[in-house]
Amino acid sequence: MYRAFLLLILAAAGCAHCDRDPKFLFDLSLAKEYYRNGKFGEAIQKFEDAVEKCPDSYDAIVGLASSDREWGMVKFTEAEDLYRVKKVEFAKKEFTKANKVHKMAEKLLLKAIQLRPKDMLAYRELGIFYYKRATSPYGYPFRLDDQENRQRERDLAIRYLKKVVEKEPKDWFSQRDLGLALFSAGNSSEGRMHLGAYLSGMMEARKYILKVAPRRTTEQREALSNRLREFDKQLNQIRHVLYTYVTNLEKTRAEWKRHGKVDGVAALTQEILAVNNLLGQYASIEESPENP
Image (cartoon, rainbow, N blue to C red):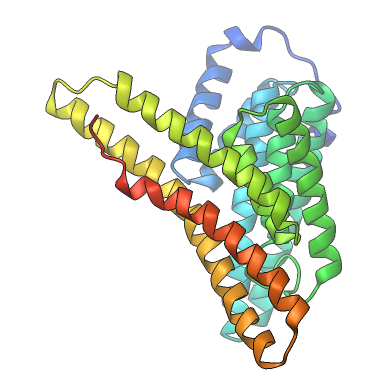
């Protein structure tokens, strides 16, 4: 797929005035549009075009790596589906494609960090890369029982996302992703802190939009409504994760009660109370009106 291994991972980096090259800007703009619309294969092609024109374009490198990450996750899912219907050889081919493109994504993001070590975008995208791989609900890229590799990549996700949050605490999406990564690694107390920060930030952003968004015309009101629904959709996704987590805790507590594990039951009860408290904050979004 990649052209001469993408210039040997941008070894020949160096471009002049790419920000004024209309062809480069067109490729970059189109690539971003493809990515936003979930057309990751097309995004990869146009980001490749952009990187070929400007090998040290930070935005193009990160965009290409992010597209590789998402396309690879799609291929891992397809490999799983093929394996389940006994098409093992086809599954292996899809797995190989996904694995290769993920290796490229990782190298590109590390290269982007070298290019701009103080810019947090590549750190964030790399953290998401490791988090998605570590928490995949499928047997790819790692088997579900491969705790060693999954934990290793969870640790890497936490490492990079913590770096982002330390420098940019108002990056609410990094707060969210870090919180989820910590939950998946078993550190729910710290995870709750970051999910709480995400909730607070998103609710403030929602209030600000309600305050300043124009609503004189039907189109403006519809745009506002759509934007608020997107906010609430994202918040409710986290609420669902927390609800599933606390439901599983309650099942475990009931089981431990039957077996007389008194100390364990007490600890689980404290955890359930803490998560329910956070859930109560998320539940409040259903009560917030779309109009002030």
